Image (cartoon, rainbow, N blue to C red):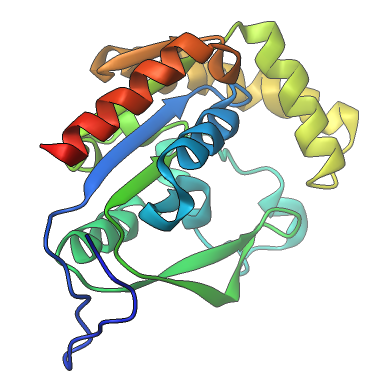
Length: 221
């Protein structure tokens, strides 16, 4: 198990095992955050590093703000997935990384970053992570959170209005123009790559208990 206090001279983290990389995908508002939180609570936060695909949105500071708001943030090209892949490769090899910080109000990447050390378990969270073959290949366990579209829309409305400073019309227009079409083109088809599909997200306690037992079993082996 990785001990954060023991650093090697070359900056590499001391490690006895390769990390277990777990991907958690699903549509926007499907309940991925709840599933991830319950996994972390069950396994223990000291053993888990959470990396969110949303942190890797491309910096749009070179565009006027009005142009930034018109971008398709639900297409795979909007994310710097190649950087996430490099970071996961580094963490798997025992090296720390600096995870970007993204401003969802301004649609820009902050000058700050979050320093992340390797952990025994790495959770990767994002709606599009299974649609990227190179990223998908890095994952040992792939979970897909499956939730009805009307529930996902309501949750997205609440999040974007309360947490990201959007207005109702803007959120609905974005959903109709980008979110739903991209879900049908990229997210829903990627479900076939999942090892486990979790209906109803964090409400499905039986499925979460099974996932936790699977993770513990792989750690023990």
